[in-house]
Image 1 (cartoon, rainbow, N blue to C red):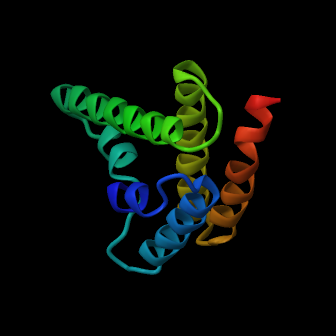
Image 2: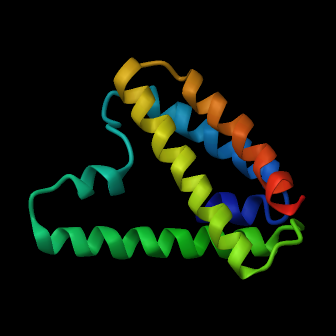
Length: 122
């Protein structure tokens, strides 16, 4: 994501479109099984759960920081909620892709995510 953050410094919609394009590319690979965090969360090792939770927290912080750097007019609390909503859409799209094999869920998530900041700021 760091590459996309720097490439789309203040272009949130461009970031979402590029991220979804990258996800579709990953989904086309036979070796891609989904989100490493959600896959790791299913591991049976309790110590690993803590590592996954820490990684998820770091990802939320990165997304929140990126959102604050965009021209979305949102404060830290709103950017944190937006980051959570991004993760919900991301995880949901990946799960639906894994269940159905259809990439249409990535496009549906992108549509929702592109509209999301307007909903939070209205």
